[in-house]
Image 1 (tube, rainbow, N blue to C red):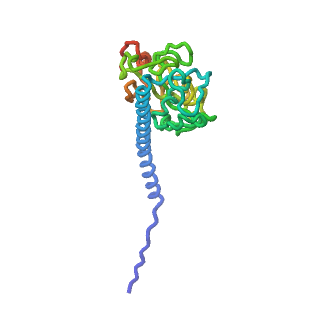
Image 2: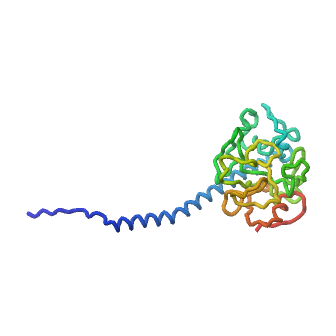
Image 3: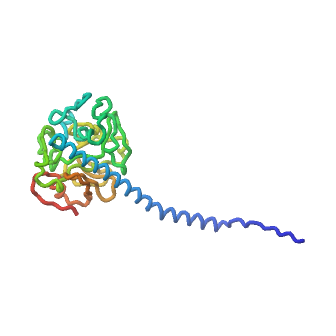
Length: 277
């Protein structure tokens, strides 16, 4: 009787190298696709956040017959009290605070011991960073458009839908048309400072009129990077930022937008016409 012995041949070195090379190639091919899926998901989530903010703007107008204001200059800090906080000209905190009851954050709105330090998830872009607070202040990734001028100055002009307190802006004051007027967008930041903040990203979402929550339209939008400036719009998305318009819709504004276009879009009453690329 003959006994047969079967042995398993070990993989030769060349075969191992081929397998490794194939795996490396597959990884190289898949990583860009995975990254694109992540970017797309983050952009959609960001749009959803801004859509809820746009809805809240109109809910605020429905209740108070005015859009929320940008508050008062940051050197005049807002005050908070339990119960129903002040509204209208009596409220020095900015639009992110004034919108809290309309984004299911009513308890936070009425809690002065928590509101300043609490990071509100809806106010952060998922493509950039998770909700966080630094130095006891919850940050924010979005800012309102004050129009072609204004910034942190007390004199204006305030031609945006969200104006410095005590200016009042109603739907009837947006004579360029709600769907034609840019109200809130993403602000440009330096990725190296996402988790530490900087001088225009440290006062927090609950501040008054400050470059944490207000940007001007004379600075064109740009991608996040070391060149980020105070009062500038921009985002962590590849081609452009998401923006809330006066009718509550969310539409993108590309980084290739001409310099003269954004000031027109951010002005509620100039009568000018501008088209995005």
